[in-house]
Image 1: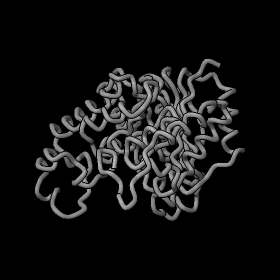
Image 2: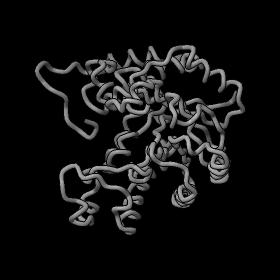
Image 3: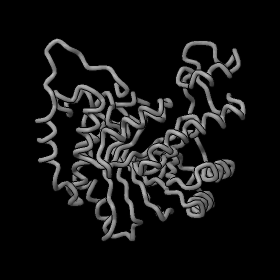
Image 4: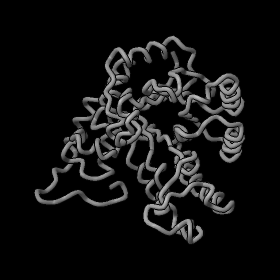
Length: 328
């Protein structure tokens, strides 16, 4: 089967992963960590873009720290997917444009509606410029728009998704919805039909089976590729609204991953298949991603690459902390 499988995780710098000691002692800075990660995997989700917009130099640093065939999957900034953000995460020019009432107070949460039309447009153009760096260097896997769990089906959101395609006409876009209402009666047909019409990939999800979560179905809606994201099956953590790391505290077993592998091998898949692990608790995501690679027969060269990198890393001097830089 002539399919390019890309297996990776939804972060390479998650605090829980850093604390797990998965990275060897010599990986003291962000560049070393990304370089080390890229010896195991050929794709990763750039989830930091969800929280704030970095400087272009950060994006260029990612490109410089990875092999030429390595792909970054750019998560859309939170405001673009019906999430609220802290005012402090906005660019300085954007904060100054907010009304005094909106911007005052520690921890004030901002939604896209709090910005005027001009500011919304400028913010999206800044995000687009950042991901255009990945696209122009042939390092972009896809752009992920992961809508908030509270975003229920509404035809206004379909109009919004059409607008996203107009703003990013030549980009591979993946859409993840997280509420069961998107699969009610005729909502499902309208939603999946729009994705097919706009050549956007539906993001299949593996997550706890709760009253409000979406079914574990794999719909192929885009010619460029398909995406599966693994969130773990910690139903108790999701019900209780646990901390972000406790929520994703779940390690898949071989049988659970084999179910997806068997489905993949039995389907008429598009040319690119991304399987991204978001069970970011300690090193669970990297362990499961490597397990999936093994099941698909994709991890032939991991060991020699790993050893050569470790040998080339400098041992940190005693008493010195981590170096600070763009990735820390």
